[in-house]
Image (cartoon, rainbow, N blue to C red; front, side, top):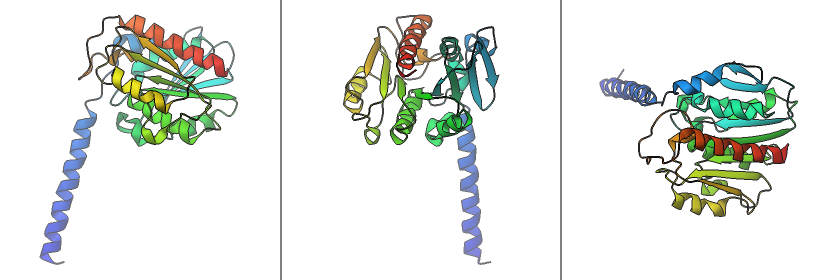
Length: 246
């Protein structure tokens, strides 16, 4: 083998190793769930919880006909959304939180397709997500208009390429007044990308991180409302959307 080729292959190998190490280090920045979130991973008389690549929350009374698929925010452990999922399931909905590769929904936008295929008995599907997860959920809804009837955006909005302005999908957009990432300006700009009848829920005092249970987040502002209150308003708005498609 030519000496120059050997050197080139060696350099490429080192670059690949460094890239792999960089991804591993980067992935270690995933925000871990707070203890309050882990407490909702237990089954109880109202909700049965299954833990795996998906977190599955099923009403214990009877199997529902409406399902809600949730995409987590970027670099947030999917278990951080267990409290909200548990509460929504208790109201009679199947809720599934998808674990994403490297905790980034952009790497598996079509994850919902496998979920839907696994539950053919579900007649009505909605999808949603927090932050980047919400943007990717919007992309899935855009590309699957015949199978997704509802969309819940938590501090999120679709990209310009995934406009749902002419869609008949039911949309609720929940955002916080103190959000340092999905700011009021960004949310306002997203209105042209969503249907005219979109329900807008502004949580006064809410920030970006309190849509989950994973602590604080870089670039965010300090919330002036409790996490419990922000969660309550978010869950209530999401349930109302699900009831509309049920």
